[in-house]
Image 1 (cartoon, one colour):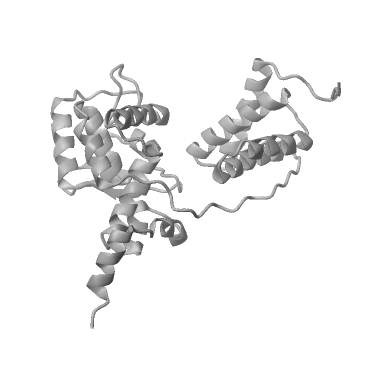
Image 2: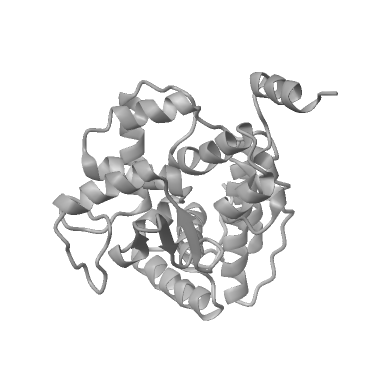
Length: 288
């Protein structure tokens, strides 16, 4: 049995102290709130694996190999390693890893009938308003959870987004159906202040919504609609509307702006269409 006499077992208290220090470090170097949450979760799992509050870089290599063997996605692996790298930087330790190239395979998506089926089984007006705002606004679940009443402009059918994934504010749109649903929801929903916010959506227990709550809510309606395709809320609110817009002939540059991508190469993942759509566009445009 090999024993590492230099490794110090990490009690829950010790781990909390280390992670609180790590959180302050990430804030001080200016990382976005969502990135901080992500890195904290990934580093906590790493420290659990290491059973130490100061594991050496050899442990990080073993942990990365273990994650690769599990078959986790490349983005999950890269994000985990970036978090661990920041943890070591906090302690003035250098650790470099090989960043895995992103998988440019066609992402999962739902078709129009799937989306309509999900809407049709949703009898809760709040949940329907949330799902339609997600889909038509092409929002990330974290962006939906941050919405306050003041961010909504039903007259212009627009949504002000604060501190998005890119760290900047943005603007999203909605169609008439979504605006009508939101009007009905706001008509029957009492306005509630939680902390310094008046959230657009809050739970039945008068708490804020979090990403995990939105995820569970979406999966419940996906199951109720009897949709067995892979994909959760991100597929529903990002991949699917992008794919539908491209399939209907929307310029990929417009899709980029609607999804608020910094790099059009990210948007190009959605430039896939069905054989039926390809045939229709071929017949429409290749004429003499």
